Image (cartoon, rainbow, N blue to C red; front, top):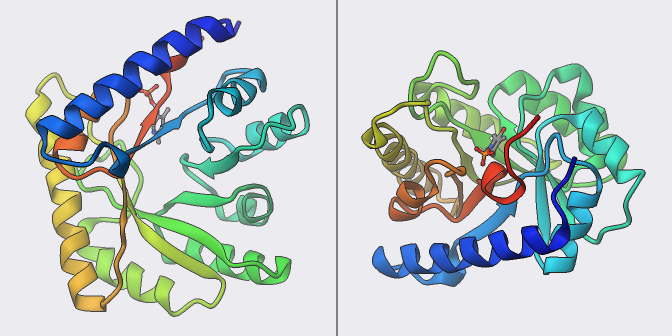
Amino acid sequence: MIIDYETFRVRADALVQRLAEACRAAGRDPAAVRLLPVTKTQSAAAADYVARYGLPAIGENRVQEAVDKQAQTAAPVRWELIGHLQSNKARLAAAHFDRVQSVGSEKLLNHLDRAAGELGKVLPVLLQINAGHDPAKSGADPAEAAQLLAAALARNHLRVDGLMTIAPLSADPAVARRTFASLRAIRDDLAGRFGVPLTELSMGMSGDWEAAVGEGSTQVRVGTALFGARG
Ligand SMILES: *Cc1c(COP(=O)(O)O)cnc(C)c1O
C-alpha cells in the first residue's frame, strides 16, 4: 500500500533539502541536480503525488507496469524508463516513454530507432554503462561505450542526452563513488572525442546519491527514500 501524500511531501522536502546541501558541499549549483522519483511497484497514485509536489518526471523500470499506470492517471509527468528493456518491447517503450535511460546495446538501439521512426518521433535516450564492471548489472562495458555512442549518433530517431549507470551493491561506499567518477570520466572522454555535450549523468539512488552528487550527477533516481521499502 502506498504512503499518504503528507508522508511523501515530508520525505521529499527533506530529500530536496539534503540534495541542496550536498550540492553546496560539492561546490555545485543545487539547480544542476534533479530528483527523479522512482515509482516502480507503487500504485499509480505515486505519479499523482509527484505531479502535485511539482516534480516533472518519474522513473519506472518495467514497460508494462508503466503502461498500466498511465491508463490510471492523468498526472502531468514525463515517464522515463530506467529498467532493463528487451528488444521485443522496444516499440511499446518508444510509444509510452518520454525517455529511455537503459540503452546498453546496439541491438536495442536499432530497435528503438526503428520504433521511434515509425511513430514519427525522436526519442531521447541515455546510454547505460556498466561503469562498476558489475556482472549483476546490465549496461554496456566501458570499453564498448564509444562504439555504442557512434552507433546512436548515426541513428535519425534517437537523441543521446548523456549516460546512466547503477553502482554495484557494496558495503564499501568507495565502490559507488569510484563507479560514479568512472562514468563521469567516460562522459568527458566521449564528449571530447565526439564533440557532443552528453550533459545528463543519471547516477545515484537512495543508498548512494550523495556520492553521485559529489561526482557530478545531474539526476538522482530515488525510490525507497521517498516511498518506503518495496513490498
Ligand atoms: C529501483 C531503481 C532505482 C531506485 O532505487 P532506490 O534504491 O529504491 O532508490 C534507481 N535506479 C534504477 C535503475 C532502479 O531500478
